[in-house]
Image 1 (cartoon, rainbow, N blue to C red):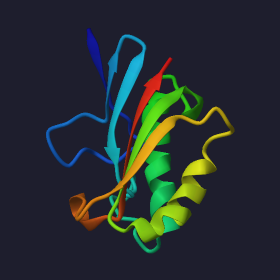
Image 2 (image 1 turned 180 degrees about the vertical axis):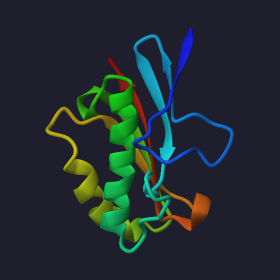
Image 3 (image 1 turned 30 degrees about the horizontal axis):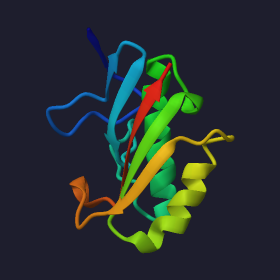
Image 4 (image 1 turned 45 degrees about the vertical axis):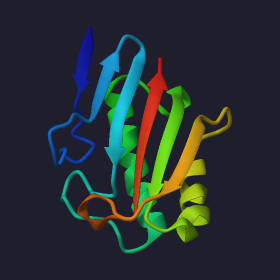
Length: 125
């Protein structure tokens, strides 16, 4: 049985997908970009601001499922420029207090809406 998770605290999906899908105790969160859920504005003025918005969007979806960052088991970070890795890592890391999830970070040629970073997560309750 799967349950679709939708949050007002994350921007509306830009395609045929859900914010998240809860299957048993596992939450699969679709890749989030730095789009503000209230205004729809892309927060791409700098990579740290963009990453913070991405993480806030993930946070909103987790909360909708009754979870938080301590429940994340796995993340995937997509970057258009690996030179942004240190800045993204700094902001990303500030959302965790230890017991970090497994993760990979990959450079891609392009992301939706022309953003610079996208992050997806798998969380377990």
